Image (cartoon, rainbow, N blue to C red; front, top):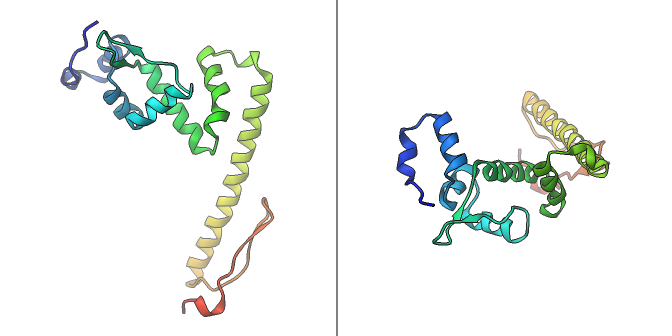
Length: 164
């Protein structure tokens, strides 16, 4: 199978680009640009089984499809939520099968992860509110800041290190 150079894509509209990428395939460089991941990261994800092994051209160069890019974007999204690469594997396998109802244990796990993210969002909003309050007051005088969802207190700087 022969692949067209990326300059051909430049003259196409988005629908034509999607069709081209889905049917012809992309190099690892093009995939890297589309997915927002480095080439090394893509190879690493393949090596650890997070991504399926890429198809190969006759010259052994990797070939990726639009679905591969979407999976890479999903990995990036899950990673941003704090999910480890190891925790992602079952979800990625499931997403490729598209049968969520067949895995109630994974549904429970992802719902638990979602609740954790929601708790983090509440805690972060409390911090944003604290910053807004301090900005309105016009100072950042030391006061304790308790994050109720975690029961942790933000440290207060010693008096000698406070700015006036």
